[in-house]
Length: 436
Image 1 (cartoon, helix red, strand yellow):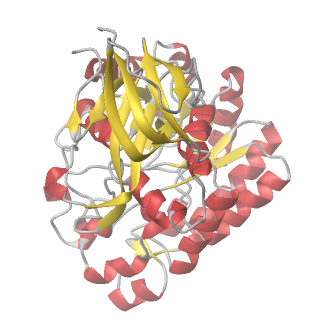
Image 2: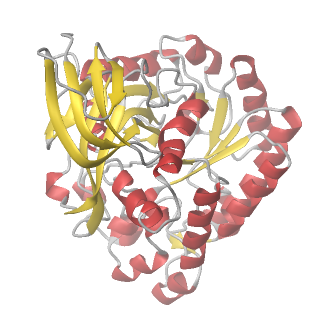
């Protein structure tokens, strides 16, 4: 990879101060106003933009191996770079399932080959995601992929004894279990949030208690064994209160919220458009407000996309037959800007915490989540928060088109993504690191 040097002009740092930023040999070499361009430096005018530490997503479905008609590691990595991400965590519900060292090493190698972002595989908690026997957790942790997050996402680890054993096992190497909180006996055949809208539509409801019961149980188990627990895609006001209660007592639990659960409500289902069918389901406006408050006050640690691509035939059908899931990588930062930053609920420093520092800490991703400072690796995200852009599903980098935001005007446009000092996304163009 050829060394390239850059001078980024006219930036606003997360603390609100103005600065130019110079990149040399993959690291930040200077931070000051009115920096002068050297003869070996490419100057880029980014006036009006905010620079953030490169975004890290702890919840991404890249579908490869086995479901390449929906997404590949390459196409998903391109979508990530376009959305401002420099690292993504690939969920284990592939085919075959990522429950062995061989599969996670394959995903890791595909990410390195793609060259847009770091791809960190997440290992399955149980064999085949069946919730019965633990997977090769130790072998995956010791593999070249060095897995530290384990999740059966898409399925809940419903057996409390299996959950306890998993939490005890990952303590050996400082791992974390990321739980998809869904009591299966309360959600069998469920299609959307249980409430007024589901009753009007005649669709089987998915009660909030199905999520909250598992969160409460796992918080208590994690406290008992003194291990790390992470709650995936939190959606209910009650779930926020449970996490808040656990943190007040010093229990080692973290939680995430998705952009779509921060923005959309179950009333979208009134359209009967399966683009709004997602697991866990869109909830009520009261839940949305609680999620926003929880993210703002730090009860919810991170924003994670739960990017879930599907081929057209899986969504262009009757609601009951449609797949659960939405795209999320390319629109996440704009949504956070629009509903959290521009409204005054969060500062850019808080965005850096929720979308870079904290996810990197949870995943133990050493090169990521670094402060913007001289000597730091130049993993950077640049957004112009005042620009608006209409989401067009035909222009996404993902192989799939199932974005629920199609036709919406979102405030905030990612203008550049730098990965180890090189632009993987700049002025609308994608370019992988390593092929310059």
